[in-house]
Image (cartoon, rainbow, N blue to C red; front, side, top):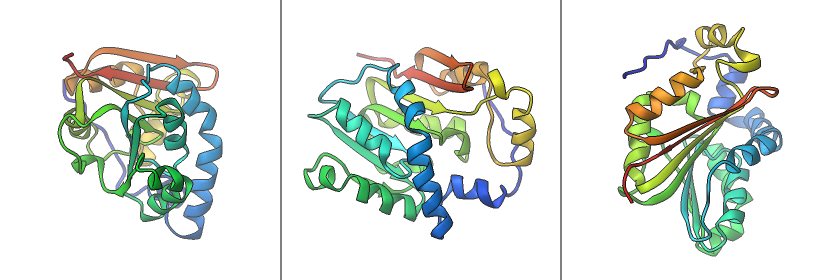
Amino acid sequence: MIISFRRSAKPSQPLSQCQKPAGWFGRLVLWRMNRSHSALTDWGLERVAIGPNDRILDVGCGGGRTIGKLLARAPQGRVDGIDHSTLAVEASRRANRRAIERGQSEIRQGSVSSLPYGSGAFDLVTAVESHFWWPKPAEDLREVWRVLKAGGQVLLIAEFYNGGRHARYARRLSDLTSIAALTPTEHRELLSGAGFDEIRIHEELRRGWICAIGRKPGT
C-alpha cells in the first residue's frame, strides 16, 4: 500500500528549527531535544534486542545523545549517525568525541533519502523524533531497508502520533505543518510497504508515545 501525506509548504519557525536546527535558536533546540527525548528514547530502545557487537545507524541524530545510549548497549560495536543539519552534526560530534576517536562512531551530514552507506551495512537503524519529518517517508524507508543486513531491524520512535492523547489534534497539526502524524495502522502499513516483516507497534497511551519496529527478511 502506498501512503501519501498532506504537508504544508513551509512549517512555522519553531517547528522548522526542530526539523533542521540552525543558528543560536537551533543550539537551544538541540540542547532541549537531548534532555526532553531521553526518557522517550530509553522507552523505545527497551523494545529491541541490541547485541554488544552490533553496527547501528541513528538517522536524524540531532544533538547526539541517542548515539551515546546506543554505544552503551553495543560496547564492542559501532554506532554511526547522520543528520541534514550542519549544526546537529557538529553538536553530535562534540557529544561523542571520544567514541569517534576510538573509531566506534562516525557522524555525517546527509539525507535519509540517499544514505551514504553500502547495502547491508547495519544490524539496526533508529530514528528518534525524525521519521515524521522525512521528505518521502515510503521511499525513504526503502532506503533504510537497503542499508540493513538481512534480519536487521528498523526502530522508529516518536512522542507524537495520530492516536492516544494526541488523536484530537494530530491531523490538524499535519495540515498546518510539515509533520506527518501517522496512526498506528499507518505506521504498520508504512513498514510493510517498504518490505519489512515481523512488524510491532508499541504505544504508551498515557504519554502519547509510539514506536514502530520492523525486520528486514532473511537470516
